[in-house]
Image (cartoon, rainbow, N blue to C red; front, side, top):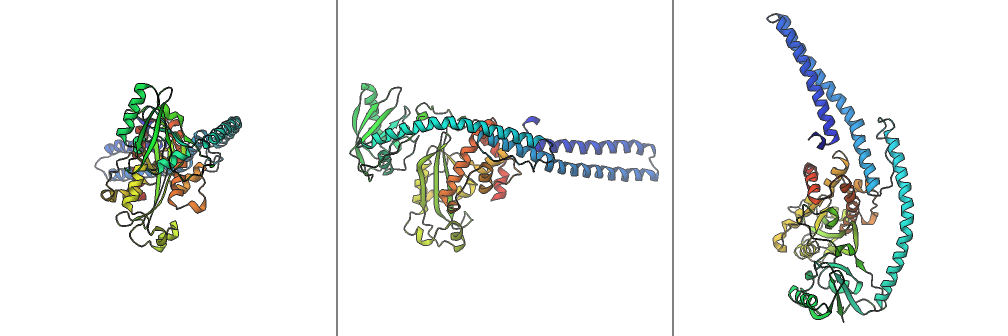
Length: 469
């Protein structure tokens, strides 16, 4: 049980035991003396001396603990977190030896290990770079080849999740919803017709043709389903109208690991690496969720430990009220910019669809979620997604005593936020996503490989968010 407690708490309990034990020893010794002189005025002196000695001993122990906590426990905790960041998140910053100046050679030894680790990582990176260059060249050839084929292509896993789509397919999907990997294809096309075509394909083992009806009820496409070896299929959409010039390259968005991913029995048992994450941020008219309004929503998607390019929301929102000049100075969103934009009901529904089937992640999530939940009836949705908060993840990994602002976390993990993007919804969401990508392997290295284990740890630091808000 004791081994599960944090380092600083264990040290604190040690000093509590030391102080109480010392005070008890003084009291026992004085009690023995008191019994020998009971009834005399000397007894009162024994009592007073005992109380005074006990208080002095407790005060001395508390003072020594404070010095020990500040100069030993905190630096050890900080060095451990920094070493994990270098080992598992690829952070290349130097170990802070000044903070650990009273730990003898420990900080310098940690820096030496870190430097050697960095050198090894550089050697590995050079090897990987050659292979990456070769793969990039092959991908460029494939992209150029697809450019010549006037169809949209989507690769679907055996579970019906999107594994790959090209640029033309992205335009088709975007007419129905924001395209995203690992989303069910039935989010975009009517399930009844699609599933009937899939059954025919599996029954015959051959390519089938059908009409794919969009979920909006207004779009329909001539499509073919072609079975793939090992399960899954490719959907080819012909004659789709897009705004992409015929000569333009159509970049591929894909993750072939999704072909073999099985659905977890429960979200608590799901490995962190198997989950989809929607990382978002809002900009608002003020800091009071019960009366202020959202003016901008930004969101990105993280899948298999990487940010998925192109899968973003960058939406201005009409708050239905004037934006205070003080707020505009922070996020640069003006009344003119939001005029004619969707209100929170429509923008919230779009974000809700974008986040479907994923874990929602935000920095100080209760603040941003409060705005969305306040308007859930207008949106006609339920915000029942599992949620992770990067403030709490930071406390788990770096200790509750550290600073947990987004700027501090980015500085700690080597994430740069371009100045023009700071305090924009998409800019902060992208920075939070980069932070998340670096923290996931650090959590796994700490033995928290499953979502439920991470939630249990973050709940221990819930007070941080209460104080923050």
